[in-house]
Image (cartoon, rainbow over the protein chains, first blue to last red):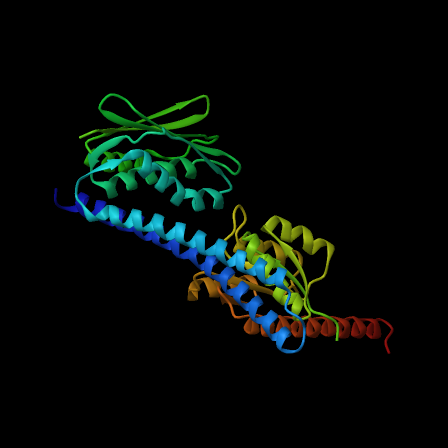
Length: 219
Length: 143
């Protein structure tokens, strides 16, 4: 594949990586801000103790617990980002769509919350394996979530369902939309990503619910 | 001297909780709000020397909240807290009426200085408004 479409696809993947990277830095800043303020509060307590006030052990335990909680949160964020980033290591690999959907849904969460919406994921307990470009799989899932999210109003729900059907992973991403909105351009870009995975995407709009169904062959 | 009255607006509850504790320990009278909507309600009920406002919040972000705040209360001193400070963001915030903007995490000392500056700005505005009022009265009475 060469020429403009390929260049555009590369830029879109780069933009996707940048978007997720920016999200992660934002979340980590929040974690570090909270850790920093709690450390500052610890300093304040120690300064009071140096001026003769007895140390408040309950307060110290509370501060310690808060810092521990934020470190655990930061660790989860970085572990997830590491999985996401390492998906770019290989051109094609056997990937678990259940795990990929979980990771991408977690990473999309900030966008969903900022839009004033909720995300509900109905995922199987077992792994669903497909052999494909892992990074492109993540890109496809995120693009589908984003497309539905951008069509929703405040308070709505993005619903993700994933199942194995024969030799394929089938994912639907849906939400109740009130307006029309021009989506054909975005759907054709999502289709281009899915086509790279030798899969397909179908769109349906019934009773005000817009659904995207992504089918990825096992490969 | 009267305590500074501050409204801290951020959807990260653990952040507002710990920062408000530190500010209270420094003699500041702090209220918190977890959203732009909540901030607008609180401002109706109380006069604040400074509003510390997070840039990135669900539903109504910091810029939108700032817009509504200064529309109803042009004298409000708003300090925006952003996780990623760019010149464009800063210019947009100042143009909309923010007093200043700081990058998170902000040092408590710097934040306290900004709060004190906000209080001084507000007192100056109040004095100017009083002077205008007195001038107006004197003019109507031709004194």
